[in-house]
Length: 63
Image (cartoon, rainbow, N blue to C red; front, side):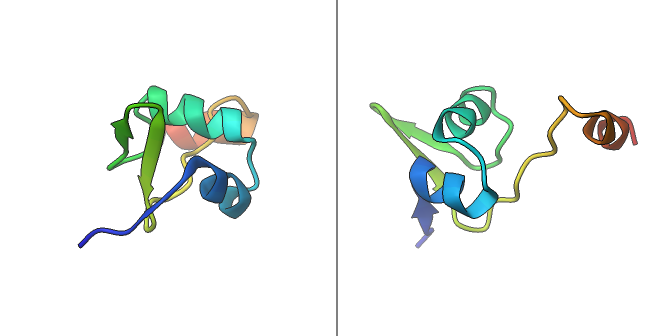
């Protein structure tokens, strides 16, 4: 069975705010996310998305 983490767990793991994680989930930037009612379930093995707001992130997105 799949293992999931909450928005709070992902925020600690990736050193991002909970709100930023919620926005990434809503924008389908994290693979395998499930939205149940008001809860986002993120796969434990999901990778942190590239931050396209930074110069380095923009460069990585265009590769």
